[in-house]
Image 1 (cartoon, chains in turn orange, yellow):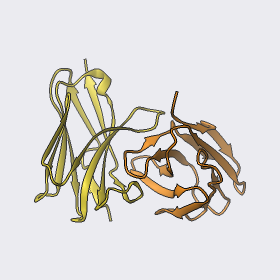
Image 2 (tube, helix red, strand yellow; image 1 turned 180 degrees about the vertical axis):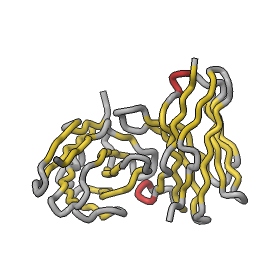
Image 3 (cartoon, helix red, strand yellow; image 1 turned 90 degrees about the vertical axis):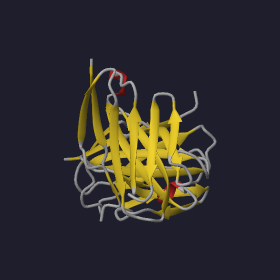
Length: 111
Length: 114
């Protein structure tokens, strides 16, 4: 089945540690995105990529990093510089023009 | 500065009745609008969209209305079903409809009671 797979679904991290969230899609979409959702908030864009080996900062990129070495994969690293990393993270993909398809999300909790 | 506002955090309706979810926006450059639906512990899924050249778009039980002068859109679900219970996000984009320019509202939790 075509879709977007995010892993892990739940992740716990100690303060000061980096953590990487995985996102893989087999929809052959050119564009991929990372969003963050906090309770009672809308989705906010962290990073996006429209082509392999290229990515752009979204509205809240500070403390995060990404890579796009393959079309199918767009991992997000939450670094120790992110001051409030506990959140629900959503990966999405889309054609360059067209609706977003989301993964099921990864919930990160900093202990 | 919240450019897309969903002022009702929650809405409760009876099965079979109409659900009306509202969304207001402030940016006059927005010209493409979407609704996404999200179940708990899942990612949002696309529901319906409307371009600013239209004032109405229908898809089965779902209709979106756009009032450009009021900068207001609404999603009507008729008849509502218990399976419609979810969080509904309104999103808007300026010219071109590029996804990386999407601004999302905070969402409205719809509960449809049997």
